[in-house]
Length: 162
Image 1 (cartoon, one colour):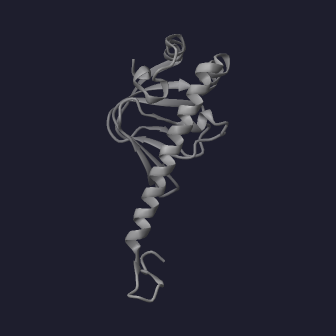
Image 2: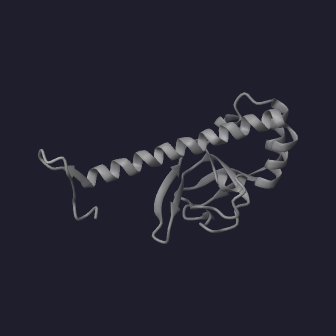
Image 3: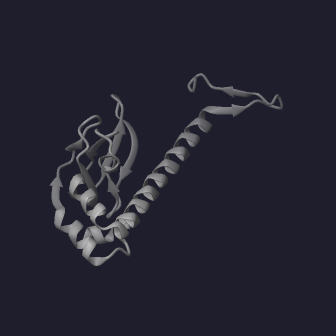
């Protein structure tokens, strides 16, 4: 059911969506559970049913993105021929999700090129949206630390930003 609600699967052939639902496993996690850590083998793709998952990078756990909308997909490193996850995924509250083995999903995509192409295009759109979101976050944080000097045309960077 939640797979059908995910933006990735809207308008796709019902049989294709049913096959995806057949390989998905509904799982529950507690606050503080890690679904995967940065550098772990990328083997699963996830669709959030309920809860909140914080995606972080680096040893200090700098937040990259928070997954908190029902039907939202994440863990797409596993679908892009990446060997490992590029971020860590930690449940920030009780979380229910659909876990999908990426190899099985990619097999379905290959076996049904029409729906597979739609899926890949929508996945590219999801990645593009996250990239734009990241650009906005970077821009807003860098603008907070940068101020223009009066009339000189030079930019003065505060010591906190340097």
